[in-house]
Length: 138
Image 1 (cartoon, rainbow, N blue to C red):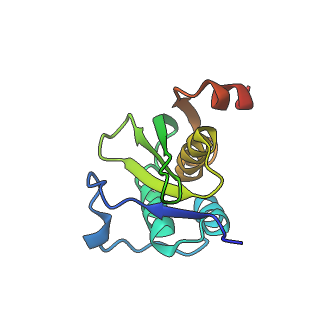
Image 2 (image 1 turned 90 degrees about the vertical axis):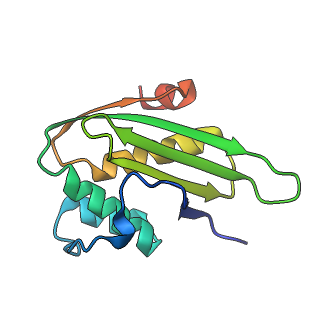
């Protein structure tokens, strides 16, 4: 059985993380620990840790999430997900996931990745267009 994957999409360019030299401490913060536990792909984990460092000093964060599900007849279904942090338009995340396709799963993954980058004890507001996801968390 194939295990699920979460991959960075190559088209998000608002944060040039590939060429920057950010020294990310391993497992020294709650964000790093959560990312290490939940994200298996090293490049994706690095990007999320860099985003966590970028919002570390904020106590009030607002995210807009979005996701999509593409069903292809001759290939594995792909779920895209992402978010933008309202406080800085350059704090953007986008990724894709395969297996067990669900638009709700994609939206929940977008919410999860936003939450694991937010500082502990921060007031977080997430705007989502997925009623199923909203109902799941209420």
